[in-house]
Amino acid sequence: MERKCCEICRYWSEMVAGFEGSGPVKAMCLSNGPRRNTYTTGKDSCPAWKENTLGAIDDPTCPGYDDEYPEDNCSMPFSGSMERKA
Image 1 (cartoon, rainbow, N blue to C red):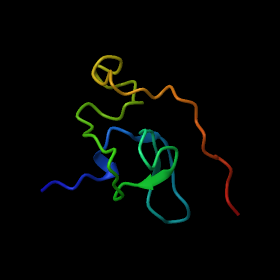
Image 2: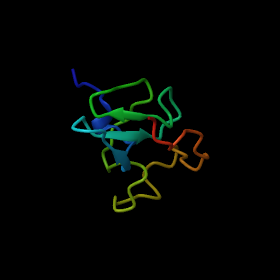
Image 3: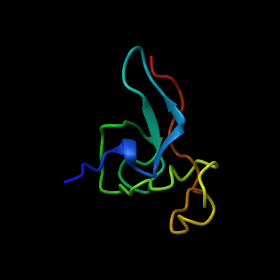
Image 4: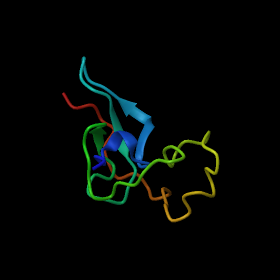
């Protein structure tokens, strides 16, 4: 059985990503699921997972960027915090 982890999810945005210290890369979740607007590692998972056959939904270099994922709407405003925690 394939593990549905964030690293291969279409909602895991490597365009909005970073890391702390020598920790793993964390990227913003763009789904409408329970992890929306949170930074997750590639090993995390959630019920909103969908395969990234053509790449992440915010990757403009993917073929079909505007066409292949019409059911996904990422135009919702960001409601998280980008402030660095002390």
